[in-house]
Image (cartoon, rainbow, N blue to C red; front, side, top):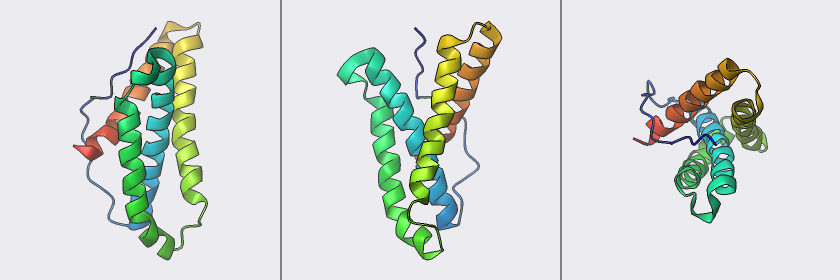
Length: 125
């Protein structure tokens, strides 16, 4: 079993200035962390914690910026699509890590996952 920590350190250049871009970033990160939290919960039980906490924080930030993004013309259902995109990114990488017969593919998926999660984690630091 491969365990992924969510304490990576790869700084993000900064938050986007437009509310629409912030909403997208927060929603994608929410989806990524929700998928990782589901994985942690499945493997570690109810005490998974860290990814779930980050997922909730990104949902809160999305809720805070969403009124401005909607006023800029974002469709009401778009944040759900962004969340799904983040979830799918992580789900495919976890599948490659778990089920690939090629060790290079599995290792590459793990590096990509670490990068995606570190992008999100850096926003909160």
